[in-house]
Length: 416
Ligand code: UD1
Picture 1 (cartoon, rainbow, N blue to C red):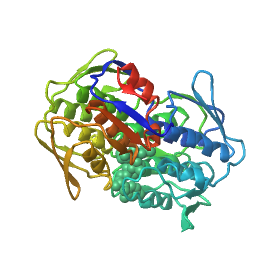
Picture 2 (picture 1 turned 90 degrees about the vertical axis):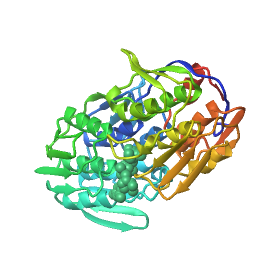
Picture 3 (picture 1 turned 135 degrees about the vertical axis):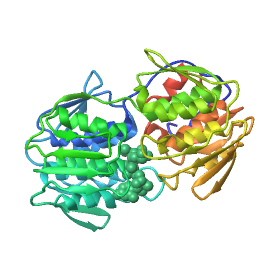
Picture 4 (picture 1 turned 120 degrees about the horizontal axis):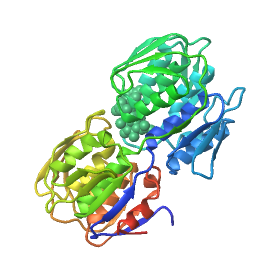
């Protein structure tokens, strides 16, 4: 059954792994493509469940979206209007469906967006997205699980984000890119995926400056012309395979990465005793003889990413000593703890902190992937554990990791 992964642990991983395009960049670029005139072609889009759902949403909205033989994704919006409502049954499957708020408002001044689903990792409000929409001239109503956003005439404006939310920054960039006048986002998110969105919109004729800093300036342009664009590599997928090398005491060359995007992860990995060497092909990660404890605080980029917290917890469960992990971004990111404990991990929770007392070994067990990154962490623990681990609800993992079974097998893992 596709929803279960079975892993026989204890094999050090060796070899090369090619990193796919970034899930979080792919999702927002797919949404943004509906604002262009003509055929957008996206290269390096990961073939993962979340992307397939975005493609289905596009089709339901009357936008043509299809895979080409060379694995690129074509997106062709109609010359007239698209459906302004994202279908609930699809939108509830992923949080990123909320990105149609910005794309639809930016395209045609109206959006009816289902309150989104996705990983259950904490309350994920949309107040900052809506603050941006209102500042740019949209009226907002929330009824029956939908956000209704309408604007007769949008206008450039200044928006201060109380927290540098990735989704809110992206939505406001999309709302503003074709809106007359100058829009400014203060305390904007600085993640590499934000920079990728700005580069993509600018390739289509947008005028966005400052992406990657906390002040983004957007000068509205009347038209965006479709282009061909290659999505950045997935830093979280890369980080996960780097930990796979470290946790199994193996040696893996992680190819197709942008090393600067990985600095926060590399720094912590080195603290735990792994060796990371930058080569022409990518990052070569060697597991150390011992795993050392390290303290982690998740923060917006360039801090340590919340999307790598669970995987790091898996590694630190096997450290020689005690580590403290503080989760500052999503409050429910500790659901993994009970599952890791089933494999022998010793972890105590105190509010937003997890105290991880390292243990010499983990053992195989029957566990459940509660969300995408928790699922990835269970895969990592299972690779290092003694005996067989069965991971249920692995669908969460397939939402974000392209060909994970094939990639791990090629590194010597026993996984099916
Ligand atoms: C994106 C990523 C996700 C990553 C997260 C943080 C995508 C598709 N997902 O999610 O993988 O874990 O960034 O790096 O790109 N918040 C508010 N009000 C808002 C919006 C957010 O309070 O209007 C809060 C959230 O509750 C959370 C924090 O801001 O505590 C960060 O959320 P945000 O950066 O918006 O994450 P997402 O865009 O949902």
